[in-house]
Length: 107
Image (cartoon, rainbow, N blue to C red; front, side, top):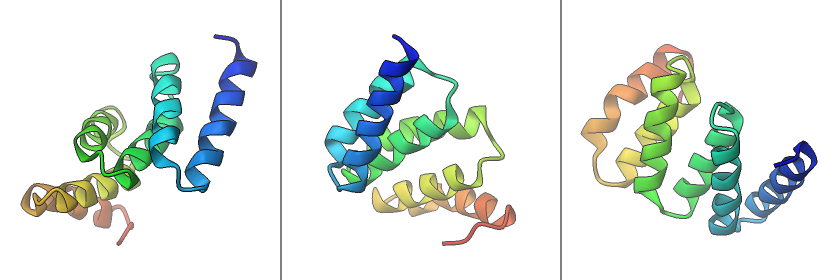
């Protein structure tokens, strides 16, 4: 895919996210993540879109991959903790919350 196309998709996805159309935004961010698998920002947008659209399993999957690849990404740890809490698995999320807090990020 051409860079201009990726930029257009990214702009549309962020617009949808900003307008709380999280499912549609997630579809576009998923497409971008497939095209650019090493792009942290896109993966974080995707995780947030999944989280806000209550696709918690998908959010968890993306965030687990992010913290594995970028372990110093504090917000990924925080969002993973919140995702697990929201899924009724707060105990599992506690370690990620502690990591985020140790990096200076709090809820």
